[in-house]
Amino acid sequence: MATKKQKENIIKKYGRKEGDTGSPEVQIALLTKRINELAAHLKKNRKDNHSRRGLLQLVADRHAHLRYLKKKSAKKYGEIRKKVGLK
Figure 1: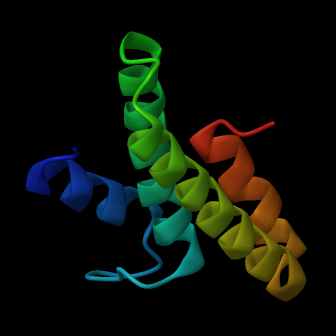
Figure 2: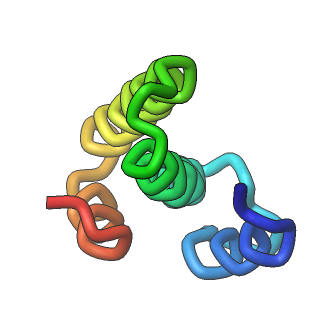
């Protein structure tokens, strides 16, 4: 789980302005952080099916945010994918 300080750093890095927590860019970055942490957990705990379901929900949520951002601004979509390390 990301600490409050880590979340603040992500919000500063990806936010459009000070205190921006709701923009798609910030949401995608926060979800990516949680997905990476949960994926690492599942590598150690292969039989944790409840966490696996949560991971799938997070991936679907991030995908929805990415689709929305692509529809609104293809330029920002490309930038955020590069920044968070998505293919």
